Length: 443
Image (cartoon, rainbow, N blue to C red; front, side, top):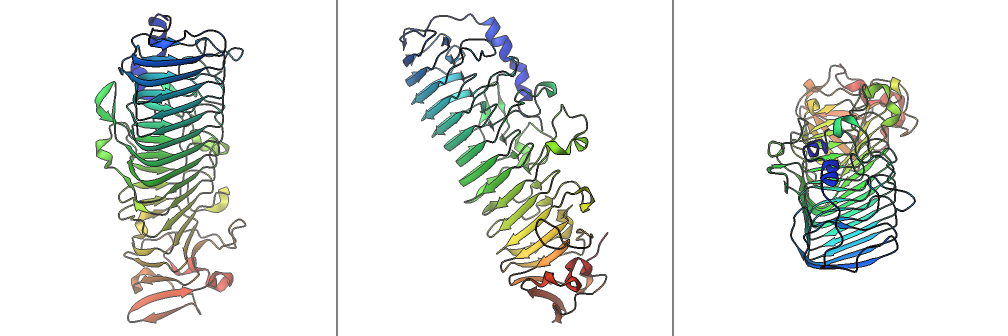
């Protein structure tokens, strides 16, 4: 993943050094001071807005011009200064602006019915890593043509009924591999009917369509539909859920990555020369697909013990489901693919690197090939209490033809019916002779 890397073409540092800092324009009153200011802006803003530290509140009402000079710098020092960085509040309603940067402090941003390029809560590339703060970003019925970024510490980002290009609660693989948010915390991102399809302001022919959460144990929720290309959980233990007919766009229309469009529980950062040597940076991720069209994409857990749950009416036609590292629990990573109340056809060749597969809660699944390969370790996984391989429980059913098996040892649980195999039952995995992985072609 290379989120934000393209932005190096338009360096922030170059912008801010080459642009003189001027007093607040007459449309913003009163002028900022080193204390706690309440500034109101309206009309056309054509000069850079620089607050001078303290706990400031800046409100934009009917501000026009999405031009560079209509930018807002909410703290004093280039790169941030913990001694002067305040807990700032930025509100924009029915307005346009180019960029707002909160730098340090616990900052709050509320943007409604507006258009803008970038919103950075704290860390700013090229200006060091000292900006810290637990930030809140709320965006509704608005359009962003650049980046929405939380940065360091524990951030809350909520976007509703909007169009965006890139959203991240923390940096990852950017700017030649430098990690600008090493203090990224446990973030919450709620995406409510949002389309990740806006073109980039510096290259209108390009669309990225990325959400990433960086480091920390993050919670990411998609609801009420919307479109996206890529979702990256980043490092640590992330929880990602999709509700209400979410949809992934055609990967060919995003120009950013060579990655297959999809959902990634982990990602390797450029600063990690060999990510496999630093497994503690990767986490035990959970990805739950309640509803949506995920056809043709890649869903990959990465390193760690990951769990992917598929529920009805999720569409996973031609979707590759990859647990991540391998299907051997010797490395202590145990990945589980679970189906709940899901009915449909699968190809075993779509399911890669899973130690466990669980058909649960009245699921009815038909395999169209005989290429399923799951974990072969003996005994039970200490976390899930389930055996390695396939488990069928709680009235779930598996339908396969005879060529699916190379051996048949599942006595007491299956029977031959009308030239097809049908396996069903509740909690049948508790008996060692019923380890379902013994029934499958194991390569």
